[in-house]
Structures are given as C-alpha cells and as structure tokens.
Image 1 (cartoon, rainbow, N blue to C red):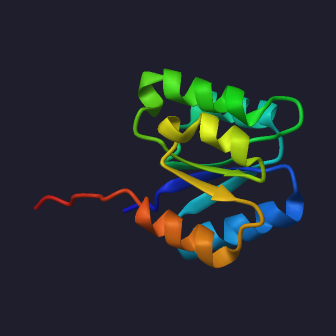
Image 2 (cartoon, rainbow, N blue to C red):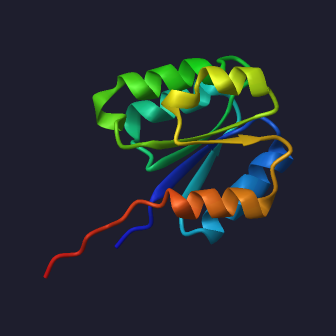
Length: 125
C-alpha cells in the first residue's frame, strides 16, 4: 500500500524542509513547491491527500490556490493545512481549510496535525 501524498507549498526553503521532515515522519510521501505557479501546475496532474499551504507566496498567492483546490471536484478529498503569520488572513479562510497553523510553526505541531488528518485506507479481504 502506498503512503499518502502531501504537497508542501512554502517559499522559505528552511521552513519547507522542516515541514517536509514532519510530514515524512508522519507517514506521507512529500514534495515541495516553492511558489504558487509550480504548485498550480503540479495540481493539474496530481491529487494530493494533504496540502500544507503558505498563505503568502511569490508569483501566485496561496488564497488563489486554496480557491482552485476547493473548486475542483477531483480534489474534494484533499485536506488543507493553512500555514501563515497573517492571523486576519487565516480567519477569512477558516471554513475552507481543515486546520490552520500560525507561524512560527514547529516540527511537533505539523507532525501532530498531519497525523490527525492522515487518510484512512480500508483494506478489504
């Protein structure tokens, strides 16, 4: 059985690496997208189980990606963790995300939330 797939959309390489490690340790296969356009292009071909999404990104804002993900039927089961230092911005999207983490965010917090949002795979005999 394959591990669930998580996409980290974060422009700070150190933060992205920390998030990736926390997600991998939680059991996800991960990929980092360092800007909104890369993530948008990747979402054409993939359906992540989880997206860890920075709200403020270069080239294409995280809010645009969030709206695009939520508007696509094939991504309806994608869980989204919004990560931001912008509390007011995060509040605007509270009903559209599965969890919100406020920067600065540590390994333990990302790991815990990722485990809570881990998809359940039912294996039949």
